[in-house]
Amino acid sequence: MPAIRGQDSKKKTRRHTRDLDQIHDDIHKEKHLDKYKSTKHTEDLPGLGQFYCVECAKWFESEANLTAHSKGKVHKRRVRQLKEEPYSQKEAEAAAGLTWTDNGKRKEEDHELEMAEAT
Ligand SMILES: [Zn+2]
Image (cartoon, rainbow, N blue to C red):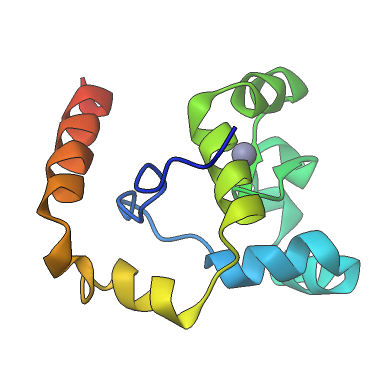
């Protein structure tokens, strides 16, 4: 199935965690991820840092939470985003809202989606 352009835009900026290009490195270079994890104190992390979603750069309280998360749409969207749209300068600009001017429709859709998820 071809990618539907526009569904994966950078609209979720509520809480900044880790940039996509960094996550990309986390996935492909174990040392990169270890380095990131080593900056955290496991005792401060949910579930003592045992349940980590690499793609989302997020820790969870329990394996059940992590499993539930990995089946959720937030995670799936992120996985697809990482696979199909390698982070690029163009996307970085898009994230900053610099290149959307030719696509007003997309903004509308994003807005609606965000409203729906907020409820
Ligand atoms: Zn995830």
